[in-house]
Length: 412
Image (cartoon, rainbow, N blue to C red; front, side, top):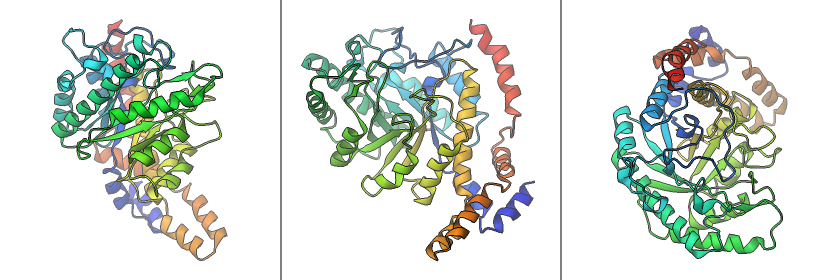
């Protein structure tokens, strides 16, 4: 089947071997919070800051060791070598009370050693939610300077932690800043909080950190639970801030108006920013963070990166959490779909499509794009799985079912 697919793609000028080789060089940053419903290991209890995981499927990870084991099981079923994204709330303190403004690289030594053993890189996220000092919905944009100072210190320490991860693993760690700050109803003064946020962010980023070790990124949002009418860190705010401070801009596919898509924004921003970070998710009527599908928008996102030849400038990460289904299966389904979308982009007959466009043969351009949709993509994907010693097709489902029976259900 693969040989047939290889010949079929070759007729349109696509080298499947080159595509598979390129796919192996595209790591996806897989998020830790799918494994435990964004709980972390602080014992914080209820999620706040507009974060909500729905469902009660048995067997969520309760300890760092359980989370690591679950991730290893998931990645054994995902072809390729990928990355792991941590939140600050997943630190290991040996039972000691360590607040967010006291976190140190040593609290992530276990994660760094584990990543080194697996040969993967780590990305990082400060945690500005689910904390008493974020209960009123504000952190870095809080009117109370004492509160702002607490979160500024947290942000500074997280940059140090991210740099330590990059140094120890020899691969740049992306340190992504998202905050929940906003109002449920119409504020009397929108500007004041945005000016305070600029001040706080400038304090966090005032000291230079080696970009070979860590890159700072900032992430916007349209609205959230409890911030339906006003979010301080809007797209316009962070776009201006990232450009003016030469930072990475993070775009989450669920953080925009329902008719907006981030695939269209990639080529609009690459001329102005050195790097972009993507959080690929699946919003359903709101920022619901459903498991990623092999759908039109996910394929469009990867296609735009490939057409721009920007795999070295756009970091692809995931952000979803579904507690209603097997969490390992959710990781596997979502990540495999993201990787399938990358492969789909790499197999596009883009040279023929561009040639038709450049010569004004627009009907040919459309015909080629449509013809590519029915090429035997699945056979190339299965070949990628086989070469990575990962079950193709649905064969992985039996492995997850066995793990659920032998490990997950016993946790409850």
